Each structure stands twice: as C-alpha cells, then as structure tokens.
Image (cartoon, rainbow, N blue to C red; front, side, top):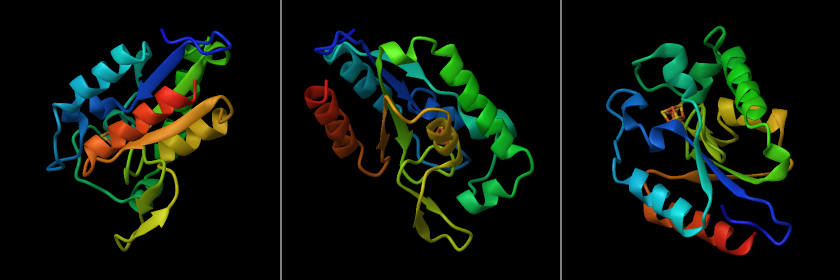
Amino acid sequence: MLKSKRNKPTILAVSHCLFNPKVRANRLSQHPGIKDKILKLGKKYNAKIEQLPCPEFLFLGEREPKTYDEYIEIPGFKNSCEKLAEDFISNLGYINECHLIVVGIARSPSCSISYVYDKNNNLKKGDGMFIHCLRKKKSDNIIFLEIDYHQIDISIEKIKAVLGTTF
Ligand code: SF4
C-alpha cells in the first residue's frame, strides 16, 4: 500500500455500486467499466480498496429511484445508515493508522458528498444519508470524494489528483 511521509497506508473505501452496479435502483444507468478504472487507481497508487455497503439495497432491496427527501421519510432508514456507518468504522479497526478516502456517488440520496434531490426534484447542497452518518462517526482523518456517473473520467482525475498530491 502507498505509504505517506508519515508512513501511513492509503485506503480507498468505494461506494458499493461502483463494483456491483446491480444494486442501483431500477432503470438507473449502469457503468460496469468503472470497476476496472477504480482497480487501476488502487494499483497505480498502491492503495487498498474496501467496498462500502449499499444502504439502499440492504434496506429496500430492488426499488424505484427516490429522492433524498423521500428516503428520510422512510421509517428506520436513517437508523440503518447509522448502524452501517458504525459497523464500517469499527470493522476498519486500523482507521487511525491509515489515510482513508471515501468515494461516494454524486447526487445519491445515500452516498452523495455534494448535492441531493429534494421532494420537488431540485438539487440542494448536502450529503447523502449514509455519508452524513459516516461523517458523524468520524470526519477527521477521512477525505470525502465522489464519482459522478455523468462525468466518470473527470471524477477519476479528481481522485488521482488527491492520491498524487495529498499523501
Ligand atoms: S449510490 Fe450508494 S445507495 Fe446508491 S446504489 Fe450506489 S452504493 Fe447503493
């Protein structure tokens, strides 16, 4: 794994659907080639890759697309995200010994780190619910980035820039 000047390894914790597009909501676009791009990034920068859980599929299974505002109305969904975030952080026991980069998904109600859709289908600034819970558990020592499925190559370049310059 990539070691920084302070000798810490780097972990890329990627949203589940980047490696398993079948968990995406019905009719959302699929990008099977992205898995190879992420694997190449990991190899090039000697970063270990961890796959995050898919909070929506684990809670609802196959489903129709929904907005962030619709998800926060679903009883139990927020608690489920809290639990997944807690489990992820505690299972990654060596978190303080590594540089952790979380890679979310732009505009996802659960995994966005930038904007989400409100009930009128307008974008508003904010994290998806799962990312919000991860930040609450631990935001220091973690860099949050995201893949925009509409701009995959640009998103990959942004992650590369962080991997190449930050550590
Ligand atoms: S963006 Fe997050 S919640 Fe949505 S399909 Fe991907 S992993 Fe699941």
